[in-house]
Length: 293
Image 1 (cartoon, rainbow, N blue to C red):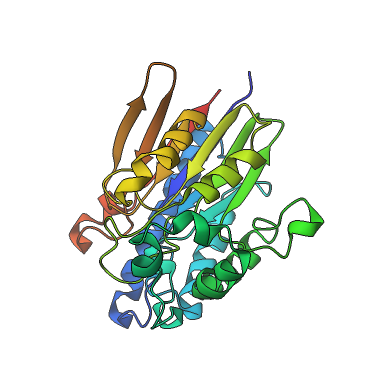
Image 2 (image 1 turned 120 degrees about the horizontal axis):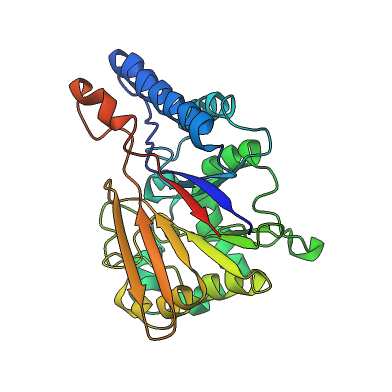
C-alpha cells in the first residue's frame, strides 16, 4: 500500500526590515525547527513533500523572500533531494502596494457576487491578481520552478494563481489553492473567496487521481464569504480527503462529514507565537507529519 508523508509548515512571516536584534532569535527558531525535522527523519523517515500554507513573507516584498529562500535551502540540507516543496500564498504574501487603488477585488468582485465571472476572465486575473504576487512568484520560481506550469503547453501562458501537483505513483494529487487573491488589507474575514472556477478547474486537473489533498492559507469556514458555503466548499469537501491550512496561528483539527464523504481539515501553528523564553515550544509546535494510504 502506497504512503505519502507530508511536513506541514505555515505562517513563517519573514518580515521586511525586522529588527536586527531579533535576527539571532529568528535564526535560532529556524535552526531548532530544522533540527527537529532531522531527528524525525532518523526516527520515522523523511517527508515526501513540504506543504507551506501561506504567509511566507509579511508584506510580500522581494527581500523577505530572499531570507525565506535561505531558510528553505537550509531545510533542504536535512531532506532527501527529491523532496518537493509545495507552497501556496497567504494574505501576507500579497504586495499591497501592487493592488489597484480604484478597483477593489473585495468590494467590486467578492461583495458584488461576481466571483465566478471574474475568475473566468484570464486577462482580469493577470491584471488584478497575478500582479500582487510577483515577488511571491519569484520565490516559487527558485524553490519549485515548474509548480505553476501546466502540463499542457497551450496553457502555460494562462494565469498562475493556483497549481496542481499529481504524484501518480502515490495516487495522490495536491491542489494548491489561492484563498488570498482578493485579500487587500486586514479585514479579510467574509470578504475573500476561493471561487468555484478555481476549485472546479483544480479538481478537473486532478480527476484521474484517487486521493486529493487541498492546500490553502485561510480556514475553509468562518473566513470565506458566505456564498462559498454552497457549491464551492461542498465540491471541495466532497472530492478532497484532506485539507491543510494556516492563518489562525493555532494547531487545530476538524472533520466535515456528510452521509457519503468526509474531509479532514488540519491547521498548522505559526513560527513566532511565543516569547524567547519559550523558544523550545515555538520551534517544534509547527511540525505535522501525516501518512496517507
